[in-house]
Image (cartoon, rainbow, N blue to C red):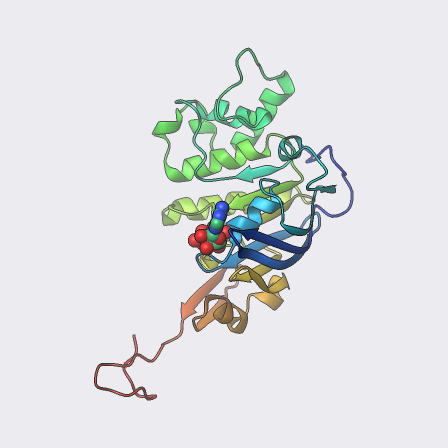
Length: 287
Ligand SMILES: Nc1ncnc2c1ncn2[C@@H]1O[C@H](COP(=O)(O)OP(=O)(O)OP(=O)(O)O)[C@@H](O)[C@H]1O
């Protein structure tokens, strides 16, 4: 299966230039610039409230910038029908809830119509049905294809939603905290599925939001660190996911370790704690 998409098949998948987003007089994003090319896999990291989901909303053509330019699949927001544009990209929201107790296969098929339920009197074509089955298999969900949504585990739902997002054959896949709430095994299976997907579809571009470096697939190529709505650093992971930059991003001293399998881990550095009736000193108690 090749991943193609109708709007502007060449050039950058995403481009944001000097983007501000202001709500109620408050800058939620300020001066954000970002270019994502085919085959790049970006991780968007930052503390709670840093603006990650807000930025993903812009990149997913859900919201518009207050200032600056956002191009999604070569189309400039503000000059296109965003509903149509959204149907060409895959957006995985772990909070997505199908309308009714749909079976996994039907949930995946709703990715074609970008709806929460199967559209009445709509039936998938033969090739579409085959693609749904292929994606379900690729995400390791064939044995659960006929299971209904309420009976799925969080991890199974996560994988079904990725298959759903891939139905329109997007060139761009947006993943908003896909590993949230997953146990260790489910998280590892999900990350392995994302790695396999990226390897199989070399021109696919992805942007993944997370708080935790442990939740980054090894195939991550680039990262942007957000702090209080501003970009602290952006570029190839080896340059951005450093102890110094990640500590500055989370305003907490951490040590970043990358293991042989390409995955990351963050360890908090001891922080001096001042006890009552004590002045801070290098020998003060540490947690
Ligand atoms: N529609 C809105 N109007 C006003 N403020 C908003 C709106 N949406 C989000 N915010 C605020 O913008 C800031 C950034 O929110 P956002 O959800 O993008 O952060 P985040 O980095 O995804 O956070 P988290 O890690 O907690 O999910 C927060 O302070 C949030 O309260």
